[in-house]
Image (cartoon, rainbow, N blue to C red):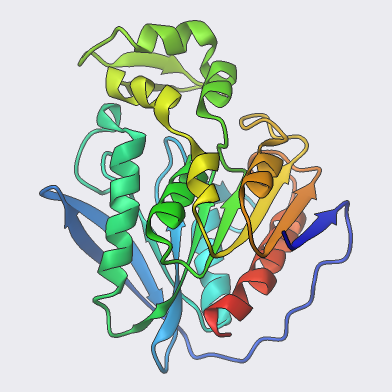
Length: 292
């Protein structure tokens, strides 16, 4: 297993970028089981570009958490950085989230994985992207989804998992308490209220909780033959530190393990230093596999 471990604080890798004209940004959609999935497609000017799919986290949406000092979401920020490197991106709202069809209580892992697999099929229909060079970035629960999409399809040349859920049972026992997870197994079609540590509540039906025990992200990534970048934080309050190593141990192939003293949001409520370093490291790892 070829592994490059990046530990501690250090100088960010400086990337040499070619100047690109302003990218085109447009809202797109496709259907899964008769329901609309809405996304934002960003394409650099010029020849068809490699494309990276961006999968948001639990209770999130496609632009993701707003960076206070920048005034834009983490995935919007990421899409801008990708475009500056000549890489297109598609960030989607999973069904039951954001602007896509459905209601959040109907969310399941299997539904989001289906949306991610359909996103691969969708980008193959676009003449503005190079469908032979596809990557994925998944954050948190979006990382769980990314592991399954990558492992089941083996289409992405490279996959990046940011603070990804490696063990759903452990994560949600910690996030919600074991009692809440157990209660979720008896709620049927009545949404269960889930007070979140961040001061608001989400509501989910029994189908979500049933899949907590049966979804195995590390087994999914074990089937993946492409390159793998894994980032995790020692101060992550939502996904326990150590999950990243589980992905690394399960995967065979080229990989990098990026570890920093960062929280689940990459310290963006302090400044963008850690996010910038992680993003630069992600891009440096991904670009050779995307033909850049």
